[in-house]
Image (cartoon, rainbow over all chains, first blue to last red; front, side, top):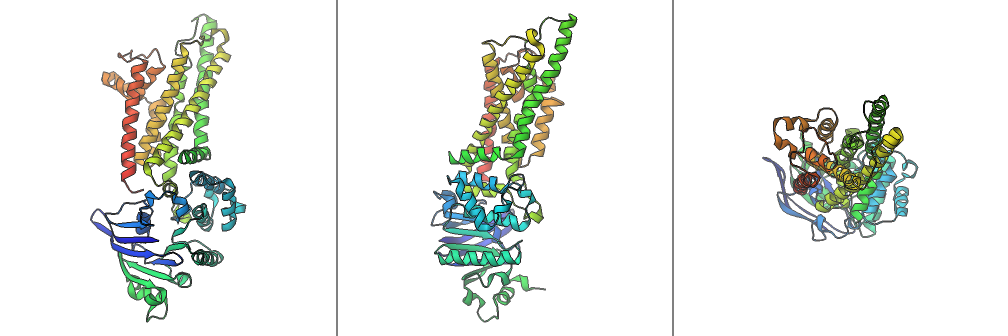
Length: 234
Length: 254
C-alpha cells in the first residue's frame, strides 16, 4: 500500500506540489496521470526518498522508503532512462544492484530473460536504444521480485510490441496481488491497463477514483483527461 | 557489508576506474624509468655516486594522479546524465533506491575508494621501486626497515588524496572541475607549493603536509612538520571534508 498525504514541494518561490493526496492499493494498477510538469515525477521522487518534501508524507507500508528494511524486495522503481552508467554492460549494472540486496547472480540472468535483454546483456548501456534502456531499468526493478512497482512513464521509448508486453506484464503483477503505480501523460496507452486513476495538474489532484468513476460521463479516459486538465487548452 | 560489496562491484566494472589504475601504475613507473636512467648516466660519468634519498618517492608523489582519477570517477559516474535520447537518467537514482540510507551509501563508497586506492598505491610502489632497482642496479638506494614507514606513508597519502578528490566531487556532483584542479595541482603547476613561497601556512595544506609522510628533502624545508605531523594534518583535512560531504549528501535532493 502506498499512501501519499498532503504532499507539498516548493523550490524557491515555485510551488511544484500543492498538497497531493492519493493511495495505491495492492492488487490494482494505479495510473498517475497528468500533463508534463504536473508534478508526477516530483511526487514519485519524494515517494522514493530521492527528493525531500516541504511538507506532507509519502509512505510505503506506513513508513518512509528510506526506512524500509529490504527496499529492493519491497519496491521496484523505474525512473528516467536506464538508471545505469553508459560505460557498464547491462549485466554488470544488474550485478552490482543484486549485490546490494544480497541476491544470487542467477537472478540477474532471470530478469534479463524476463525483459528480453539476454542477447544485449554483454553490450555497454551506452549502445542501448531508449527502449532497451527502459527494459534494463525494469529488469533492475524486478531483481528482488518486489511487492510494489513504481514506474515513471514506463511506455516512453517502447515500440508497440514493448508497450503491449508491459501492459500485459503489469496486469499480471496486479492480478497476483501486487501493487503497481505508474505515471504517464499518454492517456490512450493507459485506459486498458489501469484500475484506478489519479489525475494531477499544476501540482494538485483534479480527479481520483476508479477508471469508471474518473471517465464518468466522458466517452474515453482521454476525453476526461483533457476536460480536467490544462492539457486540453489550445 | 552488502552496500560495500555493491560499491566494490561498481568500481570494478567501471572502465574509468581501470584507466585510473593504469595511470596510477604507469605514471610513477615511467617517470621512475626516466629519472633513474638520467641518474645512472650521471653516476657513470662520475658526476655523482648514489641516487638521492627520495628516489622513487618523488615519482610516487606524482603517481597519485591515479588515485585522484579513481576518487573523482567513483562519484562523478553516479551523476553522469545520459543524453535526452537515452532518457536522461542518472545512476544515483538506482543507487539510492537500492541503498536508501544516504549515510550508508556514502560510507560504503568511501570505503570502496579507500580500499581500491590502497591496493593501487601498493601496486604502484612495487612497480616504481622495482623499476629503479632494475635501472640503477647496484647504485639504487638500498631499501631497508626505514622504508617501511615511508611506503606506508605513500599508501596513506594516496588513500587520503583519493578521498579528498572523492569528497570534493560529492559536493560538485560533476567530475571535470575537481579532476582538472587536482591533477593540474599535482602535475603541471603545483599551486599549493607556490603558496608556500608566500606564506608558511601553506605547508599545512593537505598535499604539502601529506607528502612529508614519505618525502624527506623538500626544498621548502621541514617547516617543523615531521612525517607523523604531516599525516595528522592531512587526516584532519580528509575528516573535515568527508563530514561536509556527508552533511551535503544527506540533506540535498538527489
